[in-house]
Amino acid sequence: MLGLLSAALAVVLHLLYHRQTWETAIPNDCFAAAAVEPGAPRLVCLTFDDGPGVNTEPLLAILEEEKVPATFFVCAQPVNRPYLPLVRTIVQQGHQVAMHSASHQYAQIYQSTDAFWQDIKELRRQLEPYLSLGDLTWLRFPGGSTNTVSHRYGGRRIMEELKAQTEEKGWHWIDWNVCGEDATASHPDAEQILRNIRQDAADKTVCVVLLHDTMTAGQTVEALPGIIGWFREQGYHFCTVAQMEQLQGSLQSAGE
View 1 (spheres, rainbow, N blue to C red):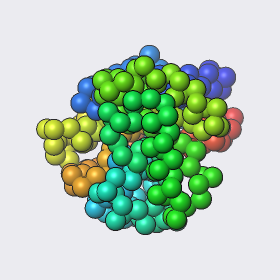
View 2: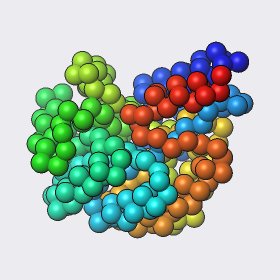
View 3: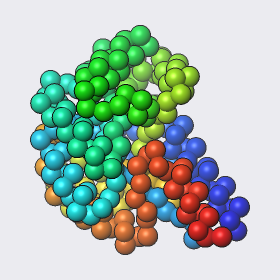
């Protein structure tokens, strides 16, 4: 039985790292084939994109109170820069900081692979005062790795090369398979964000949840306690994306 659980989780993890994701506004069902194996350990990674910002600190307070780790895929746009010192707090509280984009300008960063890596170089330069750059080894492509957003601006042409180059650096890239849709034009309220997550998370053993900590993410702050509570009720273990494989192994060992 343990071998079957290991195989099932290995498939899910492979899909999370290397399969398709969707535009935030599109229902995210691309991992449906990796459904739950009854009794398998359930893992959830809460991830927050596009911060830090005005809502990062309230989110950190909730995560601290709930003793839940999370992963923050950060940017360094002008709107982010006053909040970049919060990166130090994120690390001190036991969360993971990961790379997203300096500019988050699709039309610029997806012009070429050189343009993309120049953007990441600038992001790392902006973050260097607040953390060890050696710890920045995880990346989420703006718009997702095979998403209609990134492809619209040229990402389809260069994305496979960018993925390979990321791995050549010894880094990791990851998408998401559960989306709160909290950054869509419809501006869903906290209840709708939770409904979106519950719908996407159904029948998944491993969930990587896409949320945002931007200046318009006030409803995400309101929704977060309910999101955490729901995953706990379903028996999920919280982890950062970097902890995922390690925790998978420890949970399996505990079940022997």
